[in-house]
Amino acid sequence: MGLDLKKYPDAKVIAVDPSVIPLGSILKVEGYGTAIAADIGGGINGSSIDVFIANQGDALQWGRKSVRVEMIE
Image (cartoon, rainbow, N blue to C red; front, side, top):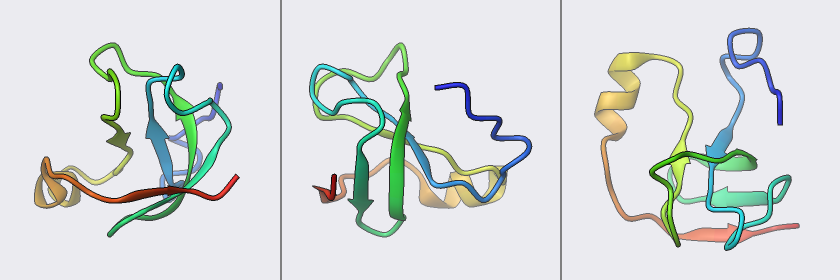
């Protein structure tokens, strides 16, 4: 969607499979907060998502896990 994440490093953005979650959707992601589905990832298929975390250490701490996702709009 063209969001400049370097300009907004605190943005809550997730990559999704747009055939499952439409781009532009607002979602509540367990442990991450309210985020916008603003990207698609080449490896994102089905119900997988990828959360944006700007700081590498924080991203490694988040890791790979299963979380509950609720669509708000």
